[in-house]
Image 1 (cartoon, helix red, strand yellow):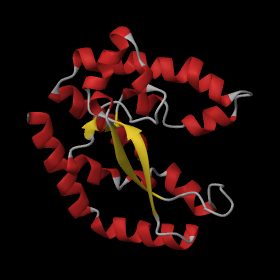
Image 2 (cartoon, rainbow, N blue to C red):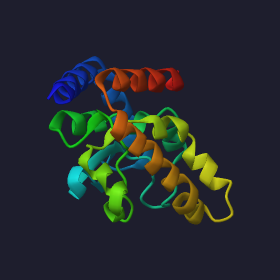
Image 3 (cartoon, one colour):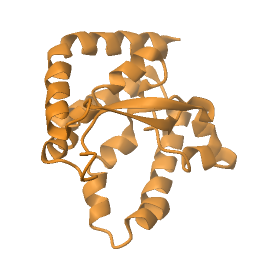
Image 4 (tube, rainbow, N blue to C red):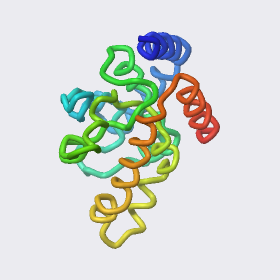
Length: 183
Protein backbone atom coordinates (compact mmCIF):
# COMPACT_ATOMS: atom_id res chain seq x y z
CA UNK A 1 0.00 0.00 0.00
CA UNK A 2 2.79 2.46 0.92
CA UNK A 3 4.65 1.54 -2.27
CA UNK A 4 1.56 2.23 -4.42
CA UNK A 5 0.94 5.60 -2.72
CA UNK A 6 4.59 6.53 -3.25
CA UNK A 7 4.46 5.39 -6.91
CA UNK A 8 1.35 7.46 -7.54
CA UNK A 9 2.77 10.55 -5.82
CA UNK A 10 6.18 10.18 -7.51
CA UNK A 11 4.65 9.56 -10.95
CA UNK A 12 2.18 12.44 -10.83
CA UNK A 13 4.78 14.88 -9.47
CA UNK A 14 7.31 13.96 -12.16
CA UNK A 15 4.75 14.15 -14.97
CA UNK A 16 3.67 17.61 -13.78
CA UNK A 17 7.25 18.82 -13.30
CA UNK A 18 8.44 17.38 -16.60
CA UNK A 19 5.38 18.05 -18.77
CA UNK A 20 7.38 20.59 -20.79
CA UNK A 21 10.06 17.94 -21.41
CA UNK A 22 7.42 15.35 -22.37
CA UNK A 23 6.10 17.75 -25.00
CA UNK A 24 9.57 18.61 -26.36
CA UNK A 25 10.66 14.96 -26.57
CA UNK A 26 7.34 13.94 -28.13
CA UNK A 27 7.68 16.61 -30.83
CA UNK A 28 11.30 15.59 -31.38
CA UNK A 29 10.30 11.90 -31.72
CA UNK A 30 7.47 12.80 -34.13
CA UNK A 31 9.79 14.70 -36.45
CA UNK A 32 12.72 12.33 -36.02
CA UNK A 33 10.81 9.13 -36.81
CA UNK A 34 7.98 10.63 -38.90
CA UNK A 35 5.41 8.73 -36.77
CA UNK A 36 3.10 9.51 -33.87
CA UNK A 37 6.25 9.61 -31.74
CA UNK A 38 4.91 7.01 -29.31
CA UNK A 39 5.85 3.33 -29.16
CA UNK A 40 3.61 0.81 -27.40
CA UNK A 41 4.73 -2.76 -26.80
CA UNK A 42 3.43 -5.76 -24.84
CA UNK A 43 5.58 -6.65 -21.84
CA UNK A 44 5.18 -9.16 -19.06
CA UNK A 45 3.84 -7.60 -15.88
CA UNK A 46 3.02 -8.63 -12.34
CA UNK A 47 1.75 -12.22 -12.02
CA UNK A 48 2.81 -12.82 -15.66
CA UNK A 49 -0.02 -10.69 -17.02
CA UNK A 50 0.92 -8.82 -20.21
CA UNK A 51 0.52 -5.03 -20.26
CA UNK A 52 1.27 -2.22 -22.71
CA UNK A 53 4.44 -0.27 -22.00
CA UNK A 54 4.81 3.26 -23.36
CA UNK A 55 7.97 4.79 -24.78
CA UNK A 56 8.91 7.54 -27.16
CA UNK A 57 9.67 6.06 -30.57
CA UNK A 58 13.37 5.86 -31.44
CA UNK A 59 13.27 3.53 -34.46
CA UNK A 60 12.38 4.84 -37.90
CA UNK A 61 9.59 2.63 -39.33
CA UNK A 62 10.97 2.66 -42.89
CA UNK A 63 14.61 1.88 -42.15
CA UNK A 64 13.88 -0.26 -39.05
CA UNK A 65 17.03 1.28 -37.55
CA UNK A 66 17.51 3.48 -34.53
CA UNK A 67 17.40 7.06 -35.74
CA UNK A 68 20.17 9.52 -34.94
CA UNK A 69 17.89 11.36 -32.59
CA UNK A 70 16.69 8.05 -31.19
CA UNK A 71 20.24 7.18 -30.15
CA UNK A 72 20.36 10.39 -28.14
CA UNK A 73 16.97 9.76 -26.54
CA UNK A 74 18.06 6.24 -25.56
CA UNK A 75 21.42 7.38 -24.21
CA UNK A 76 19.71 9.97 -22.00
CA UNK A 77 16.88 7.50 -21.18
CA UNK A 78 14.36 10.13 -22.34
CA UNK A 79 12.61 7.54 -24.50
CA UNK A 80 11.40 5.96 -21.25
CA UNK A 81 9.66 9.06 -19.84
CA UNK A 82 6.17 7.83 -20.88
CA UNK A 83 6.60 4.89 -18.50
CA UNK A 84 5.69 7.34 -15.75
CA UNK A 85 2.16 6.91 -17.14
CA UNK A 86 2.55 3.15 -16.57
CA UNK A 87 3.49 3.94 -12.97
CA UNK A 88 0.45 6.18 -12.54
CA UNK A 89 -1.94 3.61 -14.04
CA UNK A 90 -0.51 0.92 -11.73
CA UNK A 91 0.96 -1.44 -14.33
CA UNK A 92 4.48 -0.51 -13.18
CA UNK A 93 6.21 0.69 -10.04
CA UNK A 94 9.06 3.15 -9.69
CA UNK A 95 11.37 0.39 -8.40
CA UNK A 96 11.14 -3.22 -9.53
CA UNK A 97 12.56 -5.57 -12.16
CA UNK A 98 12.48 -4.06 -15.64
CA UNK A 99 9.61 -5.52 -17.67
CA UNK A 100 10.67 -7.86 -20.44
CA UNK A 101 9.10 -9.22 -23.58
CA UNK A 102 7.41 -12.62 -23.59
CA UNK A 103 9.80 -15.53 -23.31
CA UNK A 104 11.80 -14.37 -20.32
CA UNK A 105 10.16 -13.64 -16.96
CA UNK A 106 7.02 -15.53 -17.94
CA UNK A 107 9.17 -18.65 -18.52
CA UNK A 108 10.84 -18.68 -15.09
CA UNK A 109 10.44 -21.87 -13.07
CA UNK A 110 10.65 -22.79 -9.39
CA UNK A 111 11.95 -20.20 -6.94
CA UNK A 112 12.76 -17.78 -9.76
CA UNK A 113 9.08 -17.47 -10.69
CA UNK A 114 8.53 -15.56 -7.42
CA UNK A 115 9.77 -12.52 -9.36
CA UNK A 116 6.36 -12.43 -11.04
CA UNK A 117 4.89 -11.32 -7.69
CA UNK A 118 6.69 -7.99 -8.17
CA UNK A 119 5.41 -5.17 -10.33
CA UNK A 120 7.89 -4.31 -13.04
CA UNK A 121 9.68 -1.03 -12.40
CA UNK A 122 11.34 1.94 -14.01
CA UNK A 123 14.59 1.08 -12.28
CA UNK A 124 16.33 -1.54 -10.16
CA UNK A 125 19.88 -2.63 -9.30
CA UNK A 126 20.06 -4.61 -12.56
CA UNK A 127 19.02 -1.53 -14.54
CA UNK A 128 21.84 0.42 -12.95
CA UNK A 129 24.41 -2.34 -13.55
CA UNK A 130 23.34 -2.87 -17.17
CA UNK A 131 22.59 0.74 -18.08
CA UNK A 132 24.81 0.31 -21.17
CA UNK A 133 23.36 -3.09 -22.08
CA UNK A 134 22.84 -2.14 -25.72
CA UNK A 135 26.53 -1.29 -26.12
CA UNK A 136 27.58 -4.42 -24.25
CA UNK A 137 25.45 -6.61 -26.51
CA UNK A 138 26.84 -4.97 -29.66
CA UNK A 139 30.33 -6.04 -28.57
CA UNK A 140 29.33 -9.72 -28.46
CA UNK A 141 29.70 -12.14 -31.36
CA UNK A 142 26.37 -13.75 -30.40
CA UNK A 143 24.40 -11.02 -28.59
CA UNK A 144 21.17 -12.97 -28.04
CA UNK A 145 23.04 -15.94 -26.59
CA UNK A 146 25.10 -13.63 -24.36
CA UNK A 147 21.89 -12.00 -23.13
CA UNK A 148 20.20 -15.35 -22.50
CA UNK A 149 23.20 -17.05 -20.86
CA UNK A 150 24.91 -14.19 -19.01
CA UNK A 151 22.91 -10.98 -18.64
CA UNK A 152 19.39 -12.32 -18.07
CA UNK A 153 20.43 -14.92 -15.43
CA UNK A 154 22.43 -12.22 -13.61
CA UNK A 155 19.41 -9.90 -13.68
CA UNK A 156 17.23 -12.69 -12.29
CA UNK A 157 19.64 -13.22 -9.38
CA UNK A 158 19.81 -9.48 -8.66
CA UNK A 159 16.02 -9.19 -8.79
CA UNK A 160 15.60 -12.20 -6.48
CA UNK A 161 17.90 -10.46 -3.98
CA UNK A 162 15.71 -7.35 -4.29
CA UNK A 163 12.56 -9.45 -3.75
CA UNK A 164 13.97 -10.90 -0.53
CA UNK A 165 15.24 -7.56 0.84
CA UNK A 166 12.78 -5.02 -0.55
CA UNK A 167 11.98 -2.04 1.63
CA UNK A 168 10.90 1.56 1.21
CA UNK A 169 14.35 2.79 2.27
CA UNK A 170 15.98 0.34 -0.15
CA UNK A 171 13.78 1.69 -2.96
CA UNK A 172 14.82 5.25 -2.13
CA UNK A 173 18.48 4.19 -2.31
CA UNK A 174 17.92 2.61 -5.74
CA UNK A 175 16.16 5.76 -6.97
CA UNK A 176 19.08 7.87 -5.73
CA UNK A 177 21.64 5.57 -7.41
CA UNK A 178 19.65 5.79 -10.64
CA UNK A 179 19.56 9.59 -10.52
CA UNK A 180 23.31 9.80 -9.88
CA UNK A 181 23.97 7.42 -12.80
CA UNK A 182 21.88 9.54 -15.14
CA UNK A 183 23.71 12.71 -14.25
